[in-house]
Length: 308
Image (cartoon, rainbow, N blue to C red; front, side, top):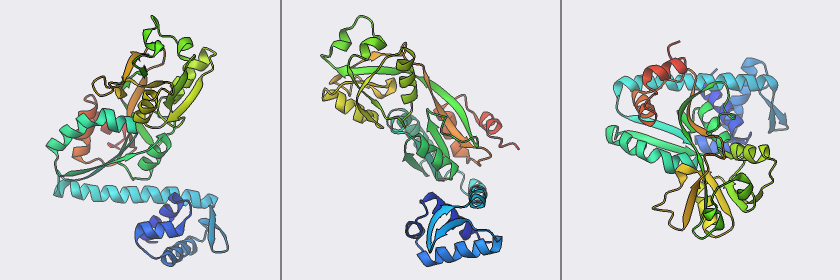
């Protein structure tokens, strides 16, 4: 059994069984990947993939278990490499974060700026995606941590550490009648076309629940993953927007006005997600504590079972 064989089966599973795509990503030949996968199956005496002729069409039940274990082995090998790097180059390396657009654009800049001043030689990689993609990037080792506001899509292998709460606001063009309402209510909001987050985005379930609990139907004019896209189409007059309060900037969003909607929707929480037992470099702990000061190294280690 070879490490590259484990890498191949994991990448094939991630890339929708497209061996040619895997070959391009790993800069190798497609026949070589197919050969190594078959050799591994022969050694284990079990089929990992279902085939229709030469084409892979599915993953067998034992194959799913083998791939899960292979993913864990590859993560642990990467952690071993990280340990070596920890002591040979304490202040340099790579740190990958999986998160959403709103967190990247409106929450992280201050933390990242301060972090880079202390660790200028650390290469930061920010991977943006929806909640499902963020979860996948952490479980597969593409990202070291997740920063997210939805935990429902995260598997039990990821520990979520609460960082801070945030609320929603309603935005509209400066002359919109919703801005002059003496009391902002869900009933009044529901009278207008709405522009808000896509179903796969953080907070959408909270918005849906608020209207549903009051028995109100909404008129969705447009949904988007990106807070800036929501603001753009509100500016165009297609509807009023519901978005994270942190995504509205009075100085920048001069064509819009916002009203606090914290009393209408449940508070949401931003979390950091870490794979249980994940080895974290010193600078990763530093970043986490900078982002959420109550999450010091000891707290993170206890929650992620890094003492075990």
